[in-house]
Image 1 (cartoon, rainbow, N blue to C red):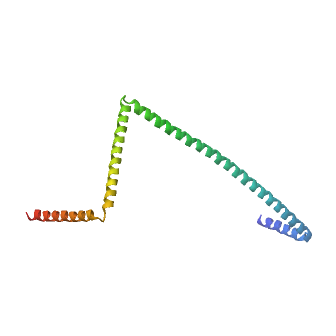
Image 2: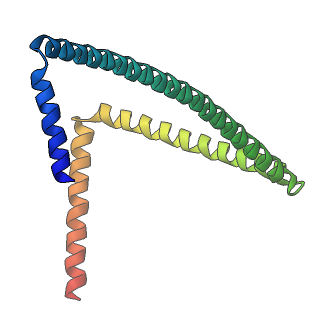
Image 3: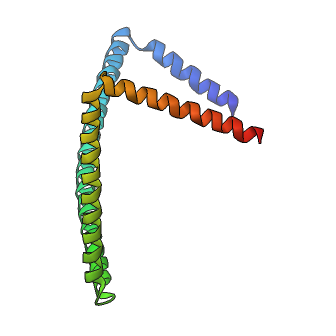
Length: 162
């Protein structure tokens, strides 16, 4: 069988050599034209496929974005509902809850006012001290602080000797 195939191939080869060169040229030209036609059809199909693919994908992404936006809005509304329901439950726990919150708020406001007043007083005292800086008062204060430190050191030494 192998010999028979070899004979067929030889026969075809000889037939090919028997063809005039012009026929070969025409046949090659036909094959080239067919190949170019196939390539252009392939390119147009690939281009069409890409357009469809990306157009469909962008549409899918657009729809998914809309869906995610709706999910975010639903989650935000659920958070608001949860907050309101917790607030309602908190105020319905006992009849004195509202009064307790008002009392707490009043106490916080009073403490805030006290702290604000204290801060204001300390700032005023600092301004007064700054105005007395580098004066006779400042020198007296420094001397007083030095005496206090000396007394503390001597007291500490006496306590250690006992």
